[in-house]
Length: 368
Picture (tube, rainbow, N blue to C red):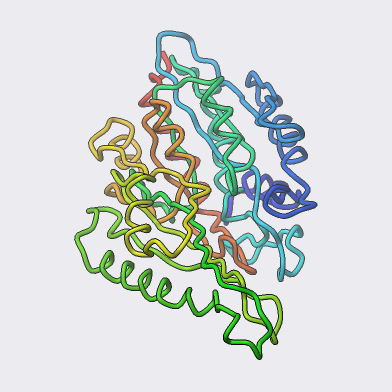
C-alpha cells in the first residue's frame, strides 16, 4: 500500500495548476506550487527562501543544514508542467492501485515530492554536510529556474529526479532547433510565367534532411545514448489556393550527442540544405555526460542497485554540469509525460525518496 504522507503530497502537488505560462499563453505558472513546497519544507525545519527566476516565476531553495565539515548535495526538481489540452480533469488527482493520475504526476511532481521528503529526512539525520532542496521554474521551456539557481547556489554534486523509471542516467542528449526557409515569387495561379513555387523548392530540402537522419542513425553511436537524430516538426507555406507561394518555412530539431556543438550542427545543416535555403538556428542546448565512475554516479547506482545508463531527453543536468556540479538523474516509474493520460507509480516515488536519503547519508557524512 502506498505511503500515505507521500501519496498525499504528490496529490497536493498535482492538484495545483502549474502550467508553464511561457509554453502555454495564460498558463497558471509556478507560484502556487512553489508556495506549497516552501510551506512543507519550512514546517520540516529547513531554512527556506524564495528566489525570483523571473517576474512571477519563483524558485524555492531550502537547506537542511548539517553539523559542518561535510559536503553539499543538491536535489533539484522543476515545478512547471506542460499544457493540459485533451486531458480529462488534469488537476483532480486520482489513485488507482499504485498509480496516481494527473498532469505532472510523472513529469515531475512525483520526483518533486520525493526530494521534499528526502530533504526533511536529511535534516532529521543530522548529517555533517548540507542537503539543498531546489524547486525550480520553467524547465519545460527555457530553464530560467535552474539558470538562476546556479548563480546563487553551489554544491559538490546533484541529483535530479526526472522520471527515469528508476534508472540512473549519467548522460543525455542535447538539441538544436532550426528554421529553414525557401523563397518563391507570389503570383496568380494562372501565371506560371510570373510565379515561383516556394513550397516545391522545399521538397529537395526535405529529402536531404531525411537522408541526413538516415546516415546519422546508421552510423556509430554513443555507448549510453545511441545515435543522434533529426526530424522535421512543422511546415507552413503559401497564402491561398489560387496563388503561387512566396515563402515556405520549415521548423526542425536535431538531437545531439556529447561533443557535438551548435556550430557543428549548423555546418552539417548548411551542407545538406545548400545555398538556396535560408537557415536560422534560434535555440540549442548541449548534451550532457558524466563519467559513470564519478562518485555521485557510483553512490546513486549502488543505492539503487542498477548500472548507469543514458536518457534520451534533455534536462537541467546539462546546466548544473556546465556550472561544475556533477549531476545524475534518478526518478520514478510511470507513463504519459506530455501525454493526455499521465500517471506515476507511487511505490517507485518512495524508492526514489529512500535512495536519496541513503545517498545523502553517504555523500554528506553520516550522523555522529
